Image (cartoon, rainbow, N blue to C red):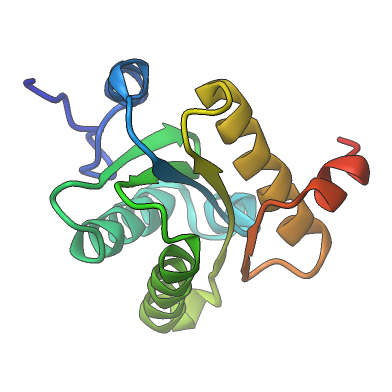
Length: 161
């Protein structure tokens, strides 16, 4: 599997993410991450700085995931990480560590990200697991950002985009 790397983040492209997902047959944790208020970076500092921020987060993600995990740029400033595990609590701790590292390394820009986590165990469609991660991400965005949340049914009931 010759992966094409996203030129800015160094992670897999959206196309490679979709190919990986299409072949996925094992329990995994899906994490959707989105850089908080990223538009301000491009507006205030220009797109080259925005690209540096995306590259930095890509490299922090790479350093903090295992070889058997998979990460890619999902679109814009959104990333999808697929952890090869069923331990959602340990993944949440890892995501929170990635966010702390990102906070520290972008202290001058005061940046953070929000993340939503969802378990894929084969009992539902992968698209539903991604949607659940998105619902959890949206929940975090609505509740102060700079955090992560594990999807639960209550979030979905209150989910209105």
